[in-house]
Amino acid sequence: MSVRVRAGNRPGSRGPVGTKRALPRVLCIVGPTSSGKTLLGIRLSRVFDGEIINADARQVFQEFDIGTGKPIGGKRTAVGARKMYLFEGVPHYLMDFLPPTKTMTVAEWQEKALVAVKGITKRGKLPIVVGGTGLYIQSLIDNYRIPQVPPQPQFRKAMESKSLDELVKLLIRVDPDAERLVDLKNPRRVLRALEVATFTGKPFTKQKGASKPVIDPFLIAIMRDRDELRERINLAVEAYVEAGWIDEIRKVRTLGIPWDAPAMTSIGYRELGAYIRGECPLDEAVKKTKDATWQYAKRQLTWFKRDQRIHWVKDEDEAEALVKKWVSSKKKNPPPHKASADRA
RNA sequence: GCCGAGGUAGCUCAGUGGUAGAGCGAAGGACUGAAAAUCCUUGCGUCGCCAGUUCGAUCCUGGCCCUCGGCA
Image (cartoon, rainbow, N blue to C red; front, side, top):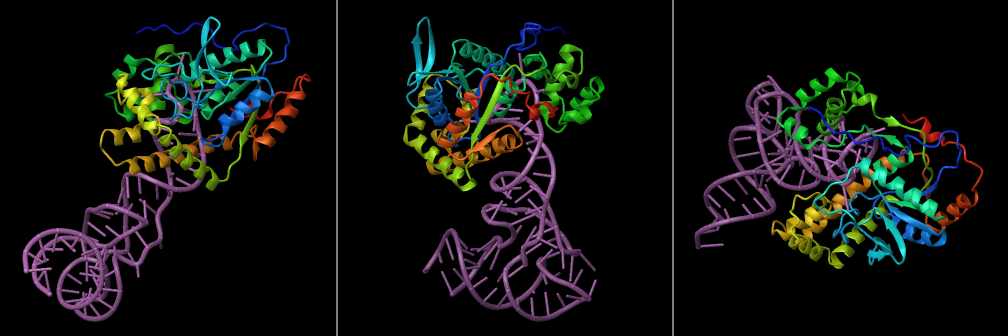
């Protein structure tokens, strides 16, 4: 079995040797859903002449607007030769471009995001990454070296009939370190590791890692206490329904998007889908959507809590003040971030 | 009022004569090409109340209380 592995165009893998240049500075607004990232991003993009790079795994989809929390009123607009997503004049990259039946991967996001960072920087603007998909953001700021094997549908299909135990055995045989470095109880992880080993002939655990940073990030998140965040989530869900979320789903259906399309598996779309199909009453679907969103927010918090580089602020004003200091501290090639180095 | 079913973890329920489990929820955690995904860890609760039988009852017997059906 042979396969075509994408050529070595991985970001950061090469570069001008010896030409020491400051890394592009990138502001990253992270944190759990409903904490206020989108609004803060818009505000800071105005104040600091920035452009936004979406780091939300669901806002990438076309037609999925209300329920994914895209800024209301933004849309694809022709700018010169090509179309770009604009919200009140602020360009958003990696937003609203993917057909709902397609999937995107971390590696693709990482690559596109870096291209966007470079373009924005070249035009003298500040790149602002905004989103709650922790893995995406980390892949960018820590320059993840992701094993270069795209998903292999036929391989995954072929392995479907195997039990987890069998997959684990196969994996350990070709990649003994997987025993302690891969979550052997998680079928997805095991399958992926096996996939990489199979198509490269080398152990998965030897191929994952991180390269030298290619950007100079500044991470910021708005701290909300538990009750407040939960309340914000509830209100957001209600506001989305009020704003026509259900009609949005119906419309997407008339466009031929099946219930099991990748974008349809987003929180709320699946719960409200059950209501639309007549499987449960509306109030139940809304309640489930709130609960699922909260569970998601907790997972995000688990992710972001451990990243010591994040500056947690209490409100937008504090965020702006902090960013102002960071922006004006330019030059001075900042020392490499400690936190990223001792994470392996 | 009569007949039937039932009262066990926050919820839905399983179960046994030797003081009890599952799913969901909740809390915490992981996370390198599906990430709004996927996965891991954590369960003493008066087993409705009272009395009896028994070495021992949540499980058997009797009474009581409550819930849900059906009949009046």
